[in-house]
Length: 239
Image (cartoon, rainbow, N blue to C red):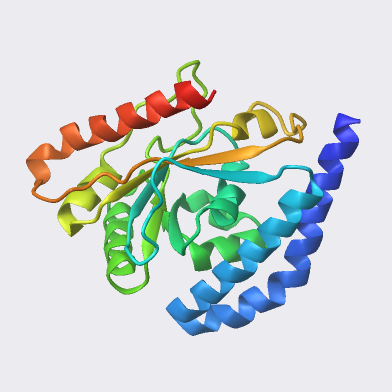
């Protein structure tokens, strides 16, 4: 039954994607406005898809974010389900930071190029360009979304160590950080196998925003540790 369930989930995803793909291409011609339109389409798609595959999402607020503010949203990363859950649970537009390799996926890569800021971590010029695009997004479009662990957490710990990028950007742009945890996604689709899908609830827990007011680049490590500790404690609590 698990194999049938996984095939069902993937087929639904592909069918929805192919139906909506012409709209992605059309709105992709309109820059920032088009990205926000595509965001709304994907958001509607995610509501339907998660419902049909038996993975209802639930938001839990330790503190409600202000939708009128721009944030650097950071979350833990342990499953491929994390990415579609961004669109289902984050209640305002965010532009994700993603690996450049994802743009090579047929068809789906075109959508990633449009919605995400792509980065090649092995290329210094690519990282510099991505930082410029992230700054421009914060100034002109809205919030951004970053997995500070950089890749899946395949350890037994709640989190793996964070990269500095999200926190350096927060300090240089004066943008508050909004920590979010996804405590259930690793149980919904375990990173170790294509076939380890299981229906069930996907919680998104919104922690209090972390202000960077009065901080400078010398506070980077302290800021990173503060966010790391808050997310670690929340993952322990909700697991």
